[in-house]
Every structure is written in structure tokens, then in C-alpha cells.
Length: 102
Image (cartoon, rainbow, N blue to C red; front, side):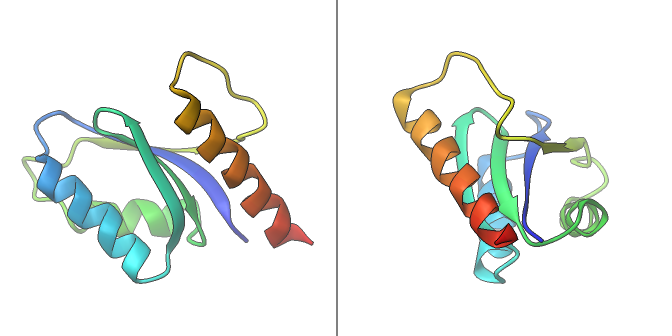
């Protein structure tokens, strides 16, 4: 079952490393959709469970870069100040999640 997560990385992790990790998750089909509207933070729709996602990310960071946080989120309960594109992505993410249940 697909779930939404926020993944936040320490600023010490390079942007190239972040894109490589998220890109490889997407290429392998583990992440269906993702967005990045806040520096070093991604919202992803993933088929992996929390532990699998956490392990995948942790295994791709070296020990000095291994400061990150994975949080499962409910896209129905969110608010804040973001560009319109971010809210559109969240609406599409909610639809993707609801489509996976039916």
C-alpha cells in the first residue's frame, strides 16, 4: 500500500547525493511521486513501508552524512505557506493514495 512520507536531510548532505537517492528510489519504482519545495526536504509517495524506506536511505549515506529524518504523513492534514505548485502536487498525491486503496 502506498504511503506519503516527508524525508528531511541535514544540510551537510550534498544536493547531488539527495537527488541520487530520491532518483534511485523513483527509478526502482519505490517512489511513485516526489516533490521538493523546501531545501533538503522531500515529500514522497512510496510503495515501501517506513522501515524499508528508512533502511534504503540509510544504506546510501556515508556515516558523516547520516543525519536524516523520515516521517509518515497524512496529506489530508497539512497546512502552511507554500507555492501553488506545492499544493497542486499535494492534491495529486492525495488522489494517488486514495486510488491505491480502491
